[in-house]
Length: 107
Image 1: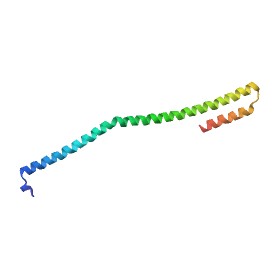
Image 2: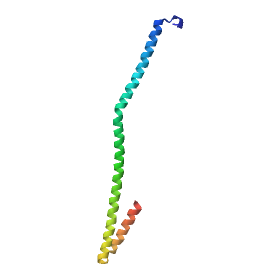
Image 3: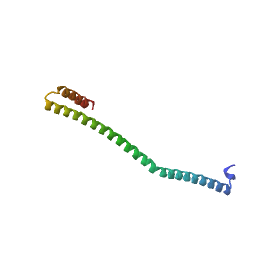
Image 4: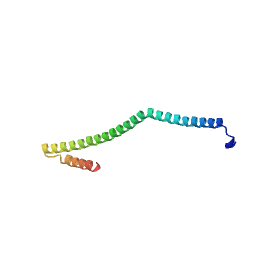
């Protein structure tokens, strides 16, 4: 079939098929866009949840470190009080000093 043998109906049919294919592509694109639009709130919520989980884990680790530090400091204060009250307990002071030193180094 050559260009000279094409009829007006054949050209019209080819244009209709081309328009139908292009319309299908646009329809498919819009369908995908709609599905992504429906999924976006869920994706945003998941991203927010992951961010909150990360912050909670980080804060939990920090709180545990603070609690550990407070315990070390309290043991040191108790050793100092014990030493002041009865004048001995030097071994408790030495142990408490070592514990505080280790805590500050490992931090």
